[in-house]
Amino acid sequence: MLSADSITSLIKDGTIKWPGQLRGDGLLLTLGSPLQPLTASPSQVVDLADQGSINSLYGEPVTDWTSYEMKPAEMLLGGVDQPLRLGAGLMGMIGGLSHLARLGLAIHVTSPFVLPGWNGHLTLELVNTGPATLRLHHGMPLGRLLIFALDGSHSDDVTPHPFYGHEADLKSRYAEEFPTHPSQR
Image (tube, rainbow, N blue to C red; front, side, top):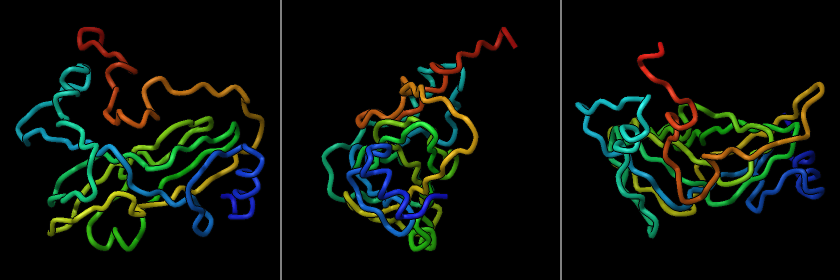
């Protein structure tokens, strides 16, 4: 894991592009726009091999907001306010703030890794696991990104991901990226 001094040096030389705040030995992640609510009912079945079925899971994105009330058991995708670019040979790991975890807010529950060459806005997977409605505020710190240097040789050719990193689109594109046809299993 890189120290604050190492991260600051990599920001200065352009290996990492980050306009946000450094806190301790990590990048402080703040909540931006849009928010993407998941609105399916518990009885709805989402077919992971069908992108249309996946898309039906989502409600309208919330783009113009200052606060949002997140109900217990609600899941919400939230864009990080600041864009990030990681150079080749660097990866990140998203972690939540323990102060928020103690209130029941899980910040990134499934896929915390940010791969080398990432360029764009990160998406946080927010889940209210607590008993109370939580009021989120635009720009509030929610987590941090720890940066790691990969050892050994690595490719300097980093290709941006075609589906992720775009500020306005947070939804899963699983079926588009990994086409699966039940008849081919």
